[in-house]
Length: 364
Ligand SMILES: Cc1ncc(COP(=O)(O)O)c(C=O)c1O
Image 1 (cartoon, rainbow, N blue to C red):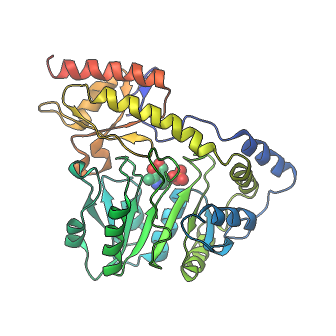
Image 2: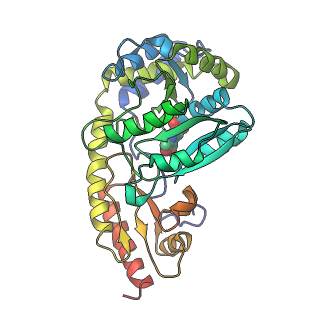
Image 3: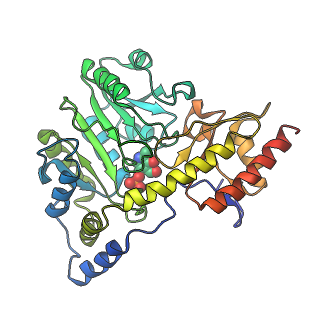
């Protein structure tokens, strides 16, 4: 889609915030390099940053310290680390579908089997335990949850979280909870798997989305399980030895001096979300939930006889780039994903084009 798009296409394609990191982070990064922080750090990362991260979870789980945190070079790195740590050949992992496309290949790289549980539109993209039960067997080692979700925008309430937790406990599974959108939530506060009464919970997080640092490549793993953290840190040593020295000072500065930055961008994302959902729901053949977090909408878009890829290609011809739902797994068919990572003016302009294309395709 990117290759086919013209330079002037309005792009709802990229899952990355259209903001820059807080200025204090950029300045500190620069200064840290000038100050000589250009060396290896300890594998788990700068103690002060890890301590700060541990404190940032106090509302969920008290008493964690730097020992509970391993800095990684992105959420992507954190995910691969966890799969490499947990999965042996012949074992399987339960993954959401529609999905963030790296999960399955990561499990395959480890010699494991990727098994997908459905997150259906009619259930607001929250999985049902009965569907999970059909997939689990004696070789299942872990289940991955991703809320707020890419691509669906699905978020959990506490009851749903507890049901998913009980399923994992009953089957003695590790929970890998990908919470990289934890601070981009629009209603109430984020519902996390951190702080639950179960010691097989591993949280993946990242500064990519919440501090608009996608290109910096920095994230972390946190868990109250110290034995797990020691194995995870060992694995991190084999993967990258450590993360980027100067950048860790920059992230620490962002957390200390621009701590409200994620909430500022979340407010803007909420306004965009409201705008795009209202527009989409007025279009022929479109049904769209209003997500409570992340930076995506995943509407059902129906045009007789056309696949989601064909619809996306028609939209592209008319100057709008979005992702066909089928790129996120078979049940994404019939959907399109729009990332609202562009200005409200561009969203409005893009939605005018989408509406015109869908009217044309529906013969209206
Ligand atoms: C659900 C989810 N997890 C993890 C990532 C990885 O983020 P990063 O590697 O930039 O930290 C992304 C990026 O789009 C994502 O959407």
